[in-house]
Image (cartoon, rainbow, N blue to C red; front, top):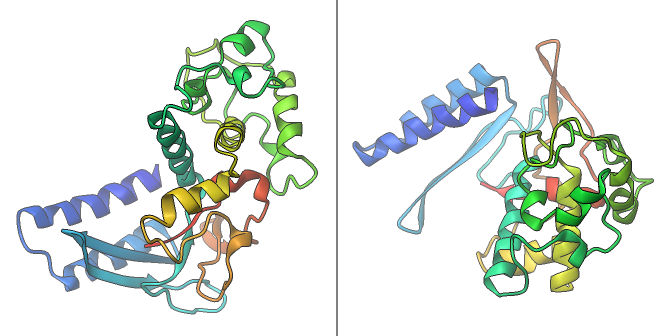
Length: 256
C-alpha cells in the first residue's frame, strides 16, 4: 500500500506539469519529502519530455551503511516490476504470430502439471500472468526465496502439481511468482533465447538501455547499484542482493 501512495504522490506532482511549469526545485522538494514519508534510502528521478531527458537526478543514499549518494546513473533492482518485461516479451511473440494468449501451456511445456488435471489441460499462457490460478498468495515461494539455488526451473514446473489450490480456477486474484518462471520457460522455448537474453536483446538494446541488465549476475560493475533494504521495526536494514538467476523475472536492474 505504501508503494501505491508513493507512486501516486510522484505521479500527481509530475502530472501537474501538464498544466503549469514545475521547477527542478519543486521536484527536489517532493522527492525529498517522499524519501522521508515512505522511509526509503534513495530515489533516482528522470523526467522525459518529447523524447528528451529534461531532469535526471539522484536523491538520498545507495546504502545506509556507506552513505554513498544516489546519482542519476545509479542502478535500481525493480523486483516484481520485472514481471512487466515478461508480459511484454510474451506480447511481442504473440504479435509475431509465434503464440497466442489462449494457447494451452502444455502445448509448449508437456511436463507442466497443476494439482487438478482439468486445470492442467485448460491452463493458458494468459493464466500464467493474471494471478488467477487458484494457488494461494506466494504459493511455493520457498523454492525460490530467499535463495532457492537447489531448484531448477524444471523442478519448479514439476512441483506445481503438489501445490493444493485455495480457490477455484480463475475465480480469485492471488499474487503469484512461480507461474512467471513458467512463462519465462515458454519465452525460452518459442524464441530460443533465455528470458534474460530476450529482455536484453529484444527490449533493452533497441531502446538503448545500455546500462540496464536482466539480472544481478549480469552486472559488470556493481559500484553504482543501490543496496537492497528492508524495514525492521521501523528501521531500514541492508540485506544481501537476490542473485538467484532462476527467477530472473524479479531481478531487472534499471537506470532511472
